[in-house]
Image (cartoon, rainbow, N blue to C red):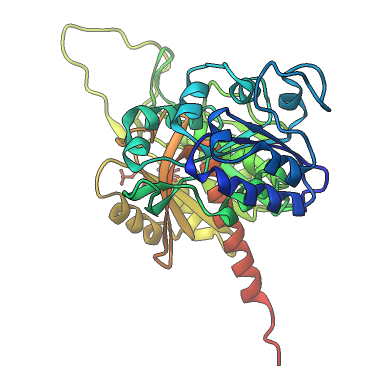
Length: 408
Ligand code: CTP
């Protein structure tokens, strides 16, 4: 139930606008408090009176119309909302928000709100696939706006393809998920490693990699929000640890191994998203290495494989690895599951647009040790973090069920 949650439903102009009536009615039955804002073109498809009757609230269309029951400021709806759901969302409203345009009641409200904003796009396939629309979606997803991927099928214009408004059930479930953050990991002890490692050459030089730690920090933030006790073992990054998380800073692979082992015993789940260097300089020189006329040879020795070590001692713990690949993503990732005794692996192609190091978004495959593969399309790293934790939760539940004595 959504008792008392304040949801603003934005309806923009498309043939799917009539489906917004069903969405509003379903949310109303869940006891949400709903206000509807329509764009002017949406009123060509559905009468404002319909939404007024469904919500028992006046419907806002024009920005400067005289306020009725709500506060005087046109941003009052933006401030009171817990969730803003834009369904259907046209290319126009997505484009406006992505480019900072606020020229009507709906775009102004979205822009002035700090609430969670969910877009459920619906439009012609070619329009949806247009690079401009996709770039706007990528930009907004990276900023933390949520998108419900449209369904595929026959569209109103006769074309067949992606672009149909997602199912009403899917949209309502998505809103429920965002309005009531689950506490489904309450009491679970979860350790995450994040960021790069730094391997010293001499007091002024080191070897590192392009990891920024964003994915691992997003997992830490999401797990904490879902009630887990989170330990974040992190190589050097520019990020601030999320509130409520125990941060253990590390530098080299060897120091990360030590930190992980020191905090290993009481963990239920270990997620290794850190980009650990496979090699380190054989000698970390105590003094700065001075240049000579000739070339310099640096001998590198193997670092311990932290994940492999954990695989051998994991017991009943859930162990999750990451694979950053540039080719044969699924095949290579599967190899790592068996080699490192993982429950599942999160694999991405670091060369794909919108994925990999430094981006705010990612596209991943979640592959488990029973060969189930789930693709998570381009989403913010926080959204991906939640999908990874959904899988963790599923694995924890499976383990608990396995432990139950048989019922006779
Ligand atoms: N990992 C680790 N310790 C290492 C190397 C990697 O714990 N010394 C972990 C990473 O945190 C990640 C996973 O192992 O979860 C990545 O595994 P792997 O692909 O073996 O690392 P790569 O070095 O990329 O392997 P390869 O060169 O074979 O692709």
